[in-house]
Image 1 (cartoon, helix red, strand yellow):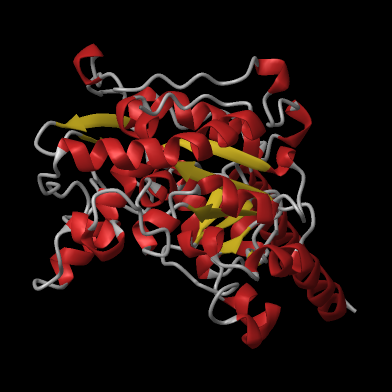
Image 2 (tube, one colour):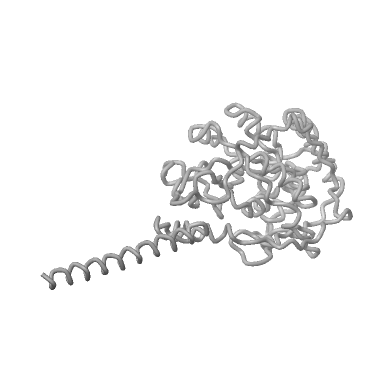
Length: 362
């Protein structure tokens, strides 16, 4: 009998010890829970989720250099009054900056696209907006809607970065804006998608386009020989790419057959250089995310005259655009520039009328 009582007492002590250990473990985990340690561990977040959470925890420096009045835009953009801007001012669309407990990142079709325009600052816009913790964007141009549409939406989805629910997935391919079949294809994917279009003075854009092409082909003809039919200094060759792309209104009208104007945000390429913070305010408002990217994220690269990021996405320090950005343009005769300005002027005026924005191009 005494032996049986001893065994029962030993069993009771062991169970009490187990209970004490279990309770201690529970309260320890509960204490860590507020710091997301136990939450991430117990719910088995994958490496993508953990790296994203780590990114959220990063801090940005408050030191920055003002771009300064001496670098003010050569043109002054006149936007509509705030109540007529085609952007969302609703605070209901503000996205969370932290994933919910146990939530895993998934690849999703984009809710927003940078569709153009080539040589207007689309890469700069992409790099600037990727600083935002609620924006995830594909780093390279996917060209799904103009080259690889036959691969299907599932293939396209897999090209996107993983995101948490509430984050905005984006992609940039400037050739979308000028490719005939793209608007219909984008509409088939998502009729409510938001699109960003970066534009700049079409004459400057044409020269920049030519500069990039001539850097890859050393025996290319002179700019004026390509811009005018048979080298004439009077008749503009509207079939030449650098000229054709700059007739923005023609391409925009094709998009407006499928989407309302309210689903587009027009970004000034000039303002992206001289006042990037102000343009990013408009971009973030349009995308329905909180104001995060601000003046403190930029400093001026005095060598190129371009703004750089003090801390770019997935970068431990400052980051500027690549060497291919900000090339020196060839000298073009003023008479040639003036003829091109006269050619673009009526198209620009129509663009101002349709968008309600006066970009102030010469």
